[in-house]
Amino acid sequence: MKLKNKFKIGLFGINSNSGLSLTKHKKRWKADWNELKKLVIFCDNNNFDFILPLSKWQGWGGSTNPNNLSYETFNFASILLNLTKRLYFYSTVHIPFIHPVYAARSISTISSYFKGRIGLNVVCGWNNNEYKMFFNNLDPLNDERYKFGEEWVKIFKSLLNKKNKNISFKGKFFNIKYANCDPKSYEQPYPSIISAAYSKDGREFAINNCSTIFTMFENLERKKKINHELIRRAKVRGNKIKIFTPIHIIARKTHSEANEFHQQYSELKIDDGATKNFIKNVAKAGKKSLYKIMMSKKNIIASSCGSKIIKGSFKDVAEQLREVRKANFNGAAFSFVNYLDEIKNFNTYVIKKKVFD
Image 1 (cartoon, rainbow, N blue to C red):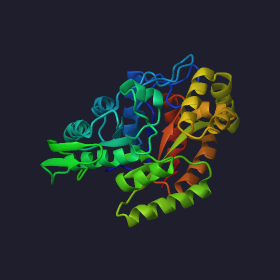
Image 2 (tube, rainbow, N blue to C red):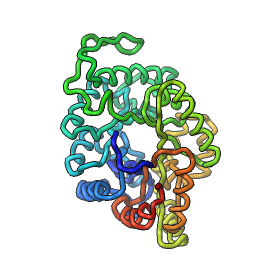
Image 3 (cartoon, one colour):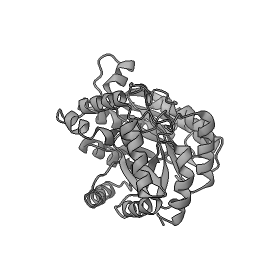
Image 4 (cartoon, rainbow, N blue to C red):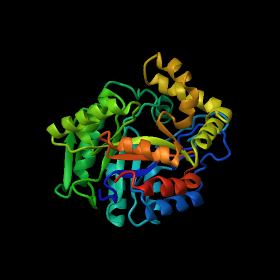
C-alpha cells in the first residue's frame, strides 16, 4: 500500500448521502456523482491519501433518510479510480453478505487494472435490520461472527497470493475445494485490509487478521496507551499494524463561526427521526443502558454518528490534529457536513500547515 504521506489522511463516508451527519441542513452531503468526481480529483491532486466508503444497505429514516442512497463499494472504487492517479480506495464489505471467493476476484480485477490502489475494509456486521435483507435467522451479534471473519479473511488472502494456484479450505463455516483467483492481487501477498475495532473481540480480530485497525477515541492520553499496547501485541504475533481513526471536522475562520455552524446543523436542523433510529440500532448492538446514554448526547450523535468531533478556527483545528498525531495513530479518515464545500479551506489552512509532518 504505497501512500504519499507518512501520517495517512483520507475521507470517510463520501459514497453515501449525508455522510456521517444526521441533519436536514441545506448543506448536507448529497453524494452527487458530479460532486464526487470533483472531490476525488481534488484529493488526488493535493494532500490526501485514501478514500474509505461506508457499506450501507438501508437508511436511517427520518425526513432525509441518511445513508439510504449508498453506492456499492467495489463499483464505486473502480469508477473513481479511473479519475485519479495515486489515490488509494478501500472497498467496504459486510463479509457475511459476500463470499470471499467473489470478493477476492472483485479486488484482483480492480487491482490488476490500476496496479494496486485498492484495499478492503472488513465489516463483520452489527445492524440487525440490514441482516434481515439477506438472511431470516442470522444474528449479526452472535458469539462466532469474528471466528467466521477469520476463516473468511484467510480464504481471501490465500486466493490473492501469487504463491497459491488453487486452494482448498475446510473450517467450521467454509468448505471450499480447488478455488482459484486469476489475476492475483497487484499488491503482494494481498492488499491492505482494514477493520473497525470498537470491541475487545473486534480488536483481537483486527490484530490477528488485518493490516490496519480503525478505531474511535475520546481521551487522547488514554487512547495513546491503548494504541501502544495494540501495536505491541500485534508485533508479538508477527503483524505490523497501523491504527487509523475517524474524525469529523468543523473548521471555520473563527471558533464562533464553527460553533454557530455546529449548532445550526446538529441542533436547529437535526433530523430527529433519523438520529433516534440510529441510536436505537446502535443500542441494540450494545448494552441496554446505551440507549439512554446516547439519547442524552443526541445532538453530538447527529453531528458525526459517533466519530470524534474536532471543531474551531483553522488554527485551533490544526493544533488539535497535531495532538492526534502524537497519540500513536498512523492515519485519520475525515468527514464533513459537505465534503466538497469544506475540503478546500481545510486543505489550505490546516493540512498545508504541515500538521502531520
